[in-house]
Length: 228
Image (cartoon, rainbow, N blue to C red; front, side):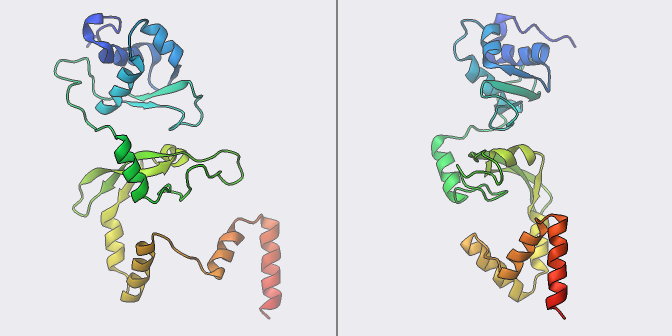
């Protein structure tokens, strides 16, 4: 089926922007704000009309989702609903997050990335890059096998690395059911505090795993001596 031209003004700005992505940019390729505005000269709020496509399943990344992009760049990742077809592009598949909802989600998630635990503005280990927090959509498999989409706070790195991950709530609850009563009480305590404190032994193990091979060998040597 031949697609209509993205230059057909009768289609409306959002539909033309969608066709421009498909016919000019192409999936997987990046474009700049200048290129978008040059393609639609004199069109007010063309940036917003492009963002509206996300509500119809279109994946368009900015530097927030893809750190390899410049601040003036975006990437057309994948096409969503063919909004130019009759009857399409009218019912939104997702709801935009308001500023109030964003603040509520940040508070509910402890102002931390729920994937790696980093806080906003905190530098990533070994780098000068600092974390930015935002709302992400996470697929969650329910105990009955159905999959729902829920909102979660993630940092810019985890939003990129975990976008295809589905959280398995049903599997998690099954594993909880196999715990002893004592283990369930410990887990409940961690969950109540939304924090787990590690013992000195566990901290040392985690630190040992980060050491180079030569240093790990030295640790084994010392432990072999002190263990005699």
